[in-house]
Image (tube, rainbow, N blue to C red; front, side):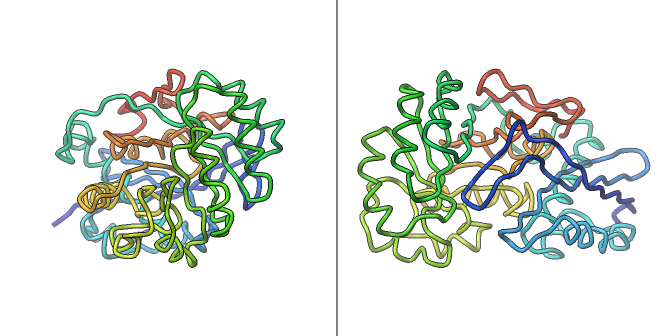
Length: 329
């Protein structure tokens, strides 16, 4: 019999450094849901970020998590959680709290509990918000020493934006994120020039419901599935359309499924990107384990915030260090 657990769920707000803008809008703060599980002796925490693109709200996610309070008192564990909730933010918050609690109980790090190799620091992309070419060139110039820049695009004027970023950061590798904002025609027109400008990958150029066209064209610029990829069940629909998948714990529903998705995607021949919603170090900590060995890592959420958690993850430039157990894991 699994021990009874108490649950605490809270909404927290953290200010963004300036503003964060993508093709769907702009934010000056983030609202996250923090989950805490306790057995009376040890405590485990997780963070999730509800995402309106998937029909999630903070209040809705909090309600879903609280609806399991009685199940947790009756012994609901991490394994049972996987079928109790669908993939999404609510399950992510609980799943990561379970992992943290397991590590605290065992007195050893989460990577050991998961049977993983000891993690090494990873190099993360740094994201440039969608803006005018002039402002994006300035932002690129301020971050020209970073080895990998991720550039948010939105359709009209995207070529000028990338040309401006390249001028501002001539030596950085670039990946771009269209956030479903392109048409097939725009991809075909932009891709060869973006390759010439040193862009290595584009995330989700087409709407998830209209991505079948990717199987019918030559993808001279490799394409990564983001909104089209949630968990392992997504993979069957991605073959022939995408070259890589972006694994985010708020989509997979936690670290448990994220690790399984990574392994299965690699087995099927996809490149791996490990990304995040805009969250704090508490959200990045479990994703750091998934990011080990990934060709593309985009876990810069805390770098885009004006304030972070206590015991935050340490970044040395773009080099992300392992989280302190006082934070998570």
